[in-house]
Image (cartoon, rainbow, N blue to C red):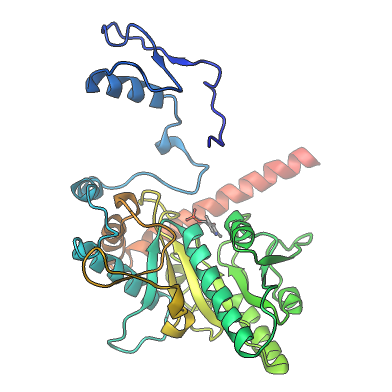
Length: 372
Ligand SMILES: *Cc1c(COP(=O)(O)O)cnc(C)c1O
């Protein structure tokens, strides 16, 4: 099924500007060609077409920054032929993923004992992470309702109307009603007071965003937590919180360490974060971390044994290549967090944010002058 439109839909052939006899006759664009062509010619044709894409280094609009150090390219290319769903065959890659999960869980203040392992998985990005977190909340809520002999067919989730599209996707794909807190003039994130008012016995969780997609603003997770604790006490429910820290999870711990938004708040049961929203990491990596083992229902974990020993997985995919591999991220973490100095990330992030703020003010000024 082709869902996207491209510029070339009407032209059924691919024409080449080269004189090689292999490309002198044009190739069909939408059908398999009758004859083969040499790999060099195929490479040239595809490479030339791709030149019409934008230049990623000049792309300041999309979420990802697509430059990485040559050492990362080397690590990725050295491992690009591994299908790392096979944890038996590639135990070191699995170990690196686990280290990432633990590093991030500690960064987000998960209540872990000295030698206790964190609970979480690497994903393709925050979208997959949010699907998994949402499924865990839904299943936990269903199990509780079933045990109480109550109906469990109308789950809902409370978010701000500023949520990223993946929450709508989760709601539609997994049949959960999305209850959105409306934004209002001058307040463009979820209002915790209104969110808690919307919570009912069918609410599987309230999702707060750390770094709203619309304006980057952090929602007040602490206030949400406090209000929800009160409501839970009054009603006897135990509505939990998920924090979508896709674009704030690697900013807040460094720049605002005092801000309580993570597992320090008791109702925060899971957090997702994207690896690729901060620059210097190729697209294709994110994580979801759970507070405790109990927050991820055991029945969602699949145990696969036909690739060797027992392998527990919780993922929407199976095969996975190295673009969504923790290696590149580990490399970034080690460069930015540990090697030069532990303050390096702060050193880089602070002026970057300052610059963003200056740009914001200039933009706001020029917008105001056009509307006046
Ligand atoms: C970008 C974003 C997502 C989706 O993240 P991907 O890693 O691109 O899948 C989810 N939530 C928020 C708040 C985001 O900014």
